[in-house]
Amino acid sequence: MRYQVIADDLRRLIESGELEAGQRLPAEAELASKYMVTNPTLRRALDVLQAEGLVEKYHGRGNFVRKPMPLLTYSIDAAAACHMARSTPGLQVGVTMSRLEADEALSALLQVERGTPLTLYVYISHVGAAPHSLARLYVPRDVADFGVPRSSSAPLGDDVRAGLTSVGVRVASTVERLTARPPTAEEAHTLGIAASRPVLSIQRTATDIAGRIVEWTFLTLPGDRTEAVFTSRTAKNSLEATR
Amino acid sequence: MRYQVIADDLRRLIESGELEAGQRLPAEAELASKYMVTNPTLRRALDVLQAEGLVEKYHGRGNFVRKPMPLLTYSIDAAAACHMARSTPGLQVGVTMSRLEADEALSALLQVERGTPLTLYVYISHVGAAPHSLARLYVPRDVADFGVPRSSSAPLGDDVRAGLTSVGVRVASTVERLTARPPTAEEAHTLGIAASRPVLSIQRTATDIAGRIVEWTFLTLPGDRTEAVFTSRTAKNSLEATR
DNA sequence: CAGTGGTCTAGACCACGAA
DNA sequence: TCGTGGTCTAGACCACTGT
View 1: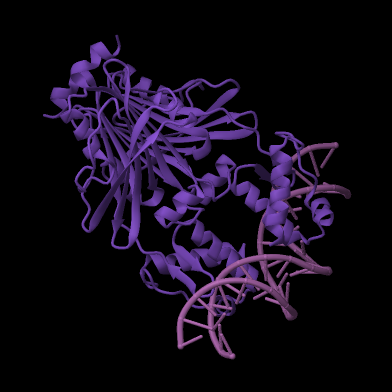
View 2: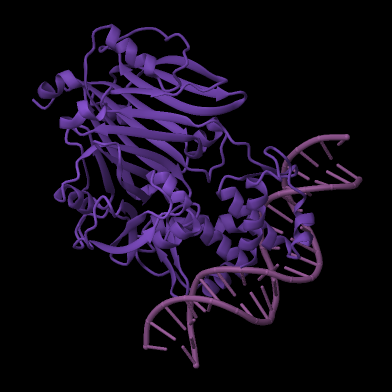
């Protein structure tokens, strides 16, 4: 298997530092002639490295050694009942807002009737040029209807939650469902990862005292750059445990 | 992109049930001529479906529609502070126990000195012949030293936790760290999944009131067959929220 | 052995990105 | 525009599985 041999050689070059992080690899045509293989075979080798998270491919620009990225920590703390991501140096967060009406799928997820007006917030965070996280938050407009939050350092939509609180919505309960799965084609493209790289997918439902769903969030986080941390303290001992 | 079109069509056939679970797909040559593409293009389409977990490939035997497996729910409930998996019909759990001494890595994880005697419990659950979950629990023997738990319906080692409580160990705090990643070769073999299928990896640390780590657990769960659910209630409203 | 999937070539052509 | 990666063909040959 020539493509494995080539992948092994390039992996060695990357891990030994001879090809530096962020650096562009030689053009595929160049590598193909160096290794005396044809285009498809060389590309197969690069696919292996991309699947391992060592290489990023950009159509028209080149193939790059993937930079080690800061770990994004998604914290789930029972004591504080808060959700935050550790602020990361160089992290930029972009927010877009759009208004839509609930279709079949959304009406089921949010437990509202079809056609219910919703607001969708999409958060995409970057470290430099590389995407780092993707968050989609749906809020029924009859629950709250505020504008685009200031682009903040919260890549996972915490400021929408803060906005809900500020308009008097009381969140009583939050349910988070976490799965590991391959990204959809769209997610892989948005996050700039290979379709074979796992993502940590988190679906978060926030319910108010009346049992109404006030926020439904869909987080897609690159598996190898994300850690979800959950801390629970046994109720009776919570005071002693914090010393 | 012809391979995507083909993948979409085959996905539709699988999801609609026209191609049944476990059934062999037509030979690649047959499919290639049906879709009027060549071998590499058809195989590319199958790669997509394999990455999505819809198809399993076996060299020399054929390509098969992957059988759906029961979902394992890993529940993290702040109110109850308990961890359990929903009992699954046909689920069988095997437990093995072994004694060892902490090496470099384990001494760091468990915050004990090298050479500290430990007990390792390995839980492997099956549904029929197919492996379903893998749990490795380490307990320092100076914390507790009980025998092999009765093989139970708890595939994730909950009975070790129960055993700790029964000998008077008070767990004050539990930290769980969840990541999505590809399996190691060993894990892929044990769980019977492809190396490209993501797993949900959970590292759970239980600490007692004195800050001593009393249990360190390493769970490896197949991503597309596991869902970790976390429920939190905002403290002040916990009574009202339960009605 | 026959049937199946796995790898590779040589080359054409398309699509994207930066200058 | 030009250099880059992305897709596809037509066909050869290899490797695994079961009879």
